[in-house]
Image 1 (cartoon, rainbow, N blue to C red):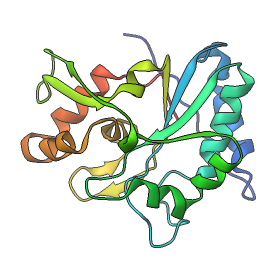
Image 2 (cartoon, one colour):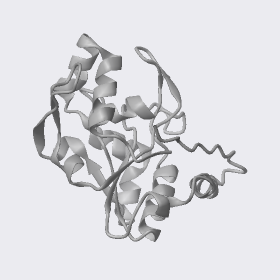
Image 3 (tube, one colour):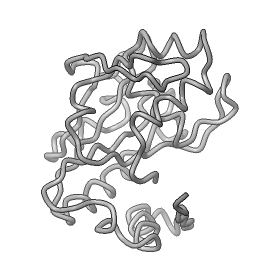
Length: 198
């Protein structure tokens, strides 16, 4: 089994971009993961509309911008995207949290709920033998997972693995909660393993 490299960097004086760059440099730089010409999905967390955008419920757009800039510098195309929790308006999450401003600045910001839905066979899945996802997810070369470190009512914590649940159509998000959240999260990550988690 390959060893994973982990870096932890403290954010000093709100210098988020500097901290992101340093953390990625410590693991060998973005060029060790992303190659020129690739399409790279930046899988953020847009689960709900937060009461206060600064409380840490969704991925901070400053972090997403910093990662997108690194990907661009590597000669690749970043695509920032997610789908909110079942029943939540993803467009409203985008507008409330400032991701609409990233789109205005020319970054590709994609609401998966507006993308074509496809079904993929996944016979190795414990809960999901068929995965209902978004066609865009199958058209990227790399996935950079950008979760939050937060508590969760069903899974104790939301981190890199659980964040990938946003790649599922709403029907299957509910299925995981009914039939086995942990096994379902493992299924999603086995089918769509992130190349980097920030």
